[in-house]
Length: 325
Image (tube, rainbow, N blue to C red; front, side, top):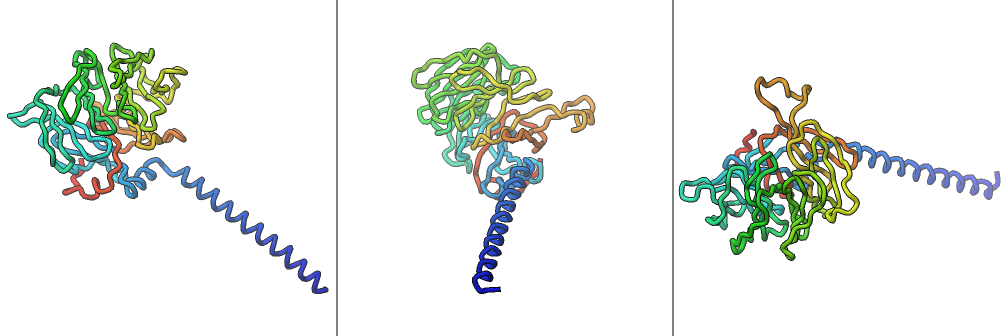
């Protein structure tokens, strides 16, 4: 074999080897992406919680409670001097119902560590009220929870000044009602969804039936519940509503994760989930659904009526006693 033929064979072999290596690399990347995409919802949530602190939080029973995705349980991370409330979207502030004798049923606000404690003596908080923080922490909407209560006045509170404005008689709101720019919020009044403009001081009727409305953090969709089906629509109302999914005995709105990829909600347990194992009682689960593939998981037994997504790395890992509920 001549040297020229030998060189040609080596060149062809090298090209084939290179082609094979490229193909193998492509296959590895494909399989890696497939495995990541096929990762269970619970496994992805546990990974994100460990890496970034992404968590579901509720405020109740004189406590700040965090869902531990890896253990499928709820952990108490802070004590409070009051009852039901809400954490701000950035995880720095807490609003709750003060329950000391001197300020019973008044709205209170403090830093998550207990600093900057303040009581709003002009804001009474009946037991069925819900608190919704604006993304910039400057305002709160306070109204009835979406569990059948009527008659409570829907109010808008300026956090710094304490000024309160009445928005609607009997309006109902969730804990995730604000647009990302903190200029609009969605609520339900007399079976209709409405969006309030805080700069124009007026409401727009979205002309659709539903309740338990929540606004996605990316600003693109408002989700709500109508009978047994969750819907979403453009905040302007253009294009009407589109069905997301159905759920038997759904009990809450959809709480959107900060990147709008996941939604959490509460529904009653089915027969195979322990729904018939507790005599004369109803069992509820807090669930999380990944919207890109509609897969979901149970993350904890639901004992609260409102939850918020917060990304705060030190909140769960610094839980003082790691008490499981």
